[in-house]
Image (cartoon, rainbow, N blue to C red; front, side, top):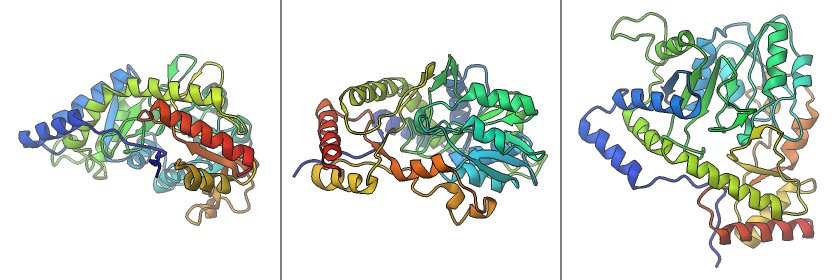
Length: 365
């Protein structure tokens, strides 16, 4: 029986375990010096010059980042429908209305034309997702935001280290959120990081994560408990020292797949973009689900289908978009499949993936 190749594989080693043990021995396990150090190191590594605020999940990062940026009841924020539900959820949780726009067929990120078409007098901002690790079209989206006097936010959950024309993701909007969930390009076990354009937004986020206070019992606003623990921060600090190498391996693996796959549509990279391949996402035009089953059952290759139900058709979010038609989003939801690209793959694994994908594509699933 052949070994199964999973679509993702978190890497947790002895260094991370030692860091957790160090924190446990210290007796300081809630938000403390490890969190403060992680925030500084994260900023320096990914978005120099911008302050970071650690929270307990990526969704909390989006939610608090929006509120810290002034999004509230009645505000509209334009988001993609082709993404994880947390993007739209966070707008709704902040009291706003998620307005869904279509995507570009190549990058799977927000279409500037579609965004322009849904702006109203209630639009507060635009929140693209740097999906699968490829940066969204931030130049065009930034120009639209400036034209209409609205804000630009970033869901960078999957895009640690991605960039566009030399600017790192997280460096475009008034805030950005990076997820630190176990399957992301780096992890803290669970958590998220808000990167803010200025100190006022960062301070608002710090208040919101900690019951509305910076000093104990001096609550300034109504807030949440969204703190990151020092245990999680210690894991994240170790992962920061490794993520650059893992990203290079992901890119090398993607280059091998690009050069050797046939019969499927491989992910293009736009000029000036650095793709960090959180996922390597191909299109299978005919019978995507049969393709996935054949990879698993006949070749032992795992894959992921993200996202088979667009957000605007989910029971939880459909009421925000009655009757909406987003053709590229619908097409992507039928055709995409993400195949293994993670840094734990061996050369033999990569060759198995290529052999399997090409064979199933030739057979028509």
